[in-house]
Length: 171
Length: 95
Image (tube, helix red, strand yellow):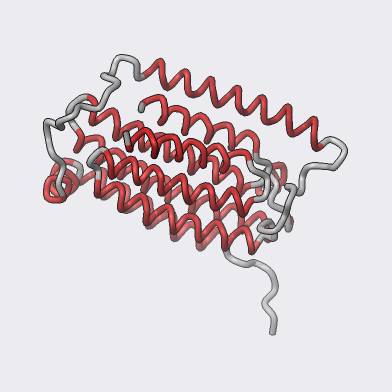
């Protein structure tokens, strides 16, 4: 029952994050949607993922607020690319087309997962605890973990290099 | 529940198409990653291997963080060059 409540709330806030125009409301909705997904994880017995999801959603929300303030989008009521004359019809068409693409994507996912059992078993055959996750990560998926760590490190270094300021320094 | 995860991913794709700015597209990608993570966790649970689904979900979430950092990097670069954040201006990075 709680899973359905959290799913409905999450879907509502994801819809809001996808289509609401003021970006500050969209960022807030994205944060609540992330918390909702974490709540779903908590309900189905994935406590570790729930905690990670909450932490990462909060960090992402803070970074989106910082960057939208930096780029001057935080208080924009209408995204700057849209002109006033074409705003209403363009918005409707774009919303319709993007919604159609979203429904198509959802149908493709549904088609791909229809062979899986759809329900979540009442009693999970295998409980997941931290020690099991640790063993899985460090013994069976060690190479994947190392590659992921290397990617994150390189992304940090590359981000610093690409985003460096190349203008003339003030004396 | 699988439908919920697919719908979240679909809304993320719709957000990527609907938004015109780079930050909006990054938000759409984050929603897509949310849906993908939920899909893998639920798939792992439904076939009786929840820990495998959790590991996949963890990797997808952290990979999503990496792409977010790359997106922010492109945004900063674009803002240096054009003082704008629209997706159409991304071609300026070719120069």
